Image (cartoon, rainbow, N blue to C red):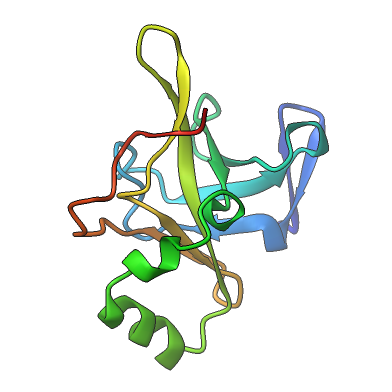
Length: 138
């Protein structure tokens, strides 16, 4: 088993930064293996980079850095499941540019949960109607 992968012919990716997504991500359901890349010049944002398709790199951010009350929107069943599985997880939201002026937004409706013990991730669609897909960061 390889312990390191190369990204962009320069960045070495440690095996502990490789996250499996058994169900893929929205829009990328066929991609299952991603690397979580922290770029100090891009903080507080990180990247989910596909190890199966070199042209897929998704900017993500910890939403609690920006919205402290965000967890109150999670369904109780999800929180209970995470607790029962003793998951050591972190939550991320996809960052994108939307609109004519290219405003930066967060997808609060579809957070990504990464379990660092299992090195497994999944994207969950939250049912709370008040959560936008394009929450402005401005």
